[in-house]
Length: 246
Image (tube, rainbow, N blue to C red):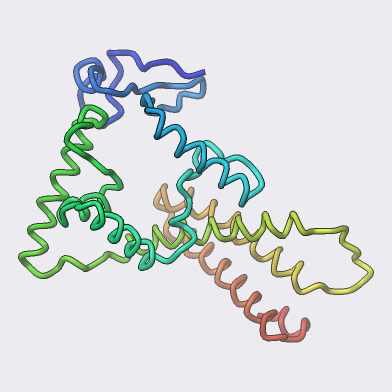
């Protein structure tokens, strides 16, 4: 059960102010649960509720379970490439007449801010939004608008690969019948094992990289790459004795 954060607590928007002197009067509430995790509670209108309910139904239909606390409800972007997702978002924004600087700000911050809903965002969010708009015009003037950092690409790619792995594993679990070890080596079972190992390694990688253990993270990346080579070997019908030596 979550309850509203106390006024004298530091504001979660990271402004450096107390909550009571920062986001207390906004159109949302910062709440805290029994585990000490802080979240944001916003009153939804009927249309937004229906959209979220439909997304949760679709998530469960694809993965066979309800989304976890930290999983994206709007997961469709993870099923397509960055290029395709950006193209679809651009088409949608242009169809409803959104200006280019606001499209850039939305991609940069992950927010969609409109003038009649400013109270739903913290001052910190609004500041990040305005900085992104200023950055758009600066990049446009210098001709560097389309450049992406390697970290932007990696973060997006890791999210997508994790979701695709989970999707494949869930589908395989649904199709799985009893495994008979006496029937010999099943390549699909081995691929499933490699994908499961990679998914768990991804989760470990995230924990390690967040604590700046860069050398250890490289070892995990090597392990994931070796699993990738094993899957490629299976797809190319490499015999198991040779395959095992990769």
